[in-house]
Length: 301
Image (cartoon, rainbow, N blue to C red; front, side, top):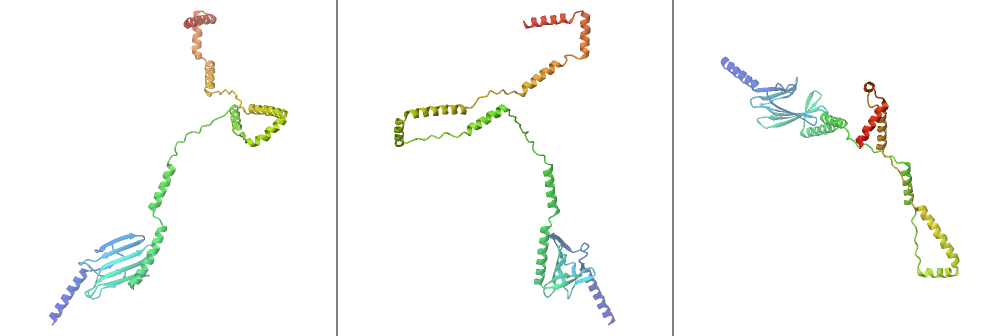
């Protein structure tokens, strides 16, 4: 009997050791050192971590530090875990898929303080939607740094760009004579047009009868009208005023000539040398001038 009991104990210990080796205690705070497959993604302010167990290394216990989240019952183990962490609200949710010999189950948990609490699927979805809406609103308000940096770079580039070379403005000066001509032309343009009236034959008959009665008065009036018309025409005729436009080039040429005449042809040293040579020759300045004049005349001929 004693031998049988010892054998049973020995076999149970071996089986227990095999179980310990094959099973894994997963710590959520220390996922980097775990042997299991882990996939972590961040999107719209939500960090989702998916953990998958392997047939060789099955998750039999789940912890977060020293706090136990889940423990196995009757050969159960965790197939997969999906952990949600909202950065805006700092809320944590978790769904666990379990394997059991009888039937597979899903467990839904949400964190309250330091511990995880069990919930139903509907409540889990409601909490998830609320936190998702809050995180989306906050991500819209907060634009990423890359977007703001790109805008700042664009504004700096716009400041650095040089403006296009603008053409110089041309300034024109009008003399007083030209301005008077322009004013006369404007006055001619603004003169009121003459009104021409045509009288029908029926209306002209009584006028003709009156003209026969008073021929002397009409002749005088016609003369006066003709004189007034001639005077008006003379006044309206534009006066042509001769204007002499002096160009700046002519002034510049005159100034250059005066400067050239005033400037000495040679320097002081050269003039002294010439005077010495003249003294050696023994000719006077008047004689030299006469010689130069004769030579210039010969060249002209």
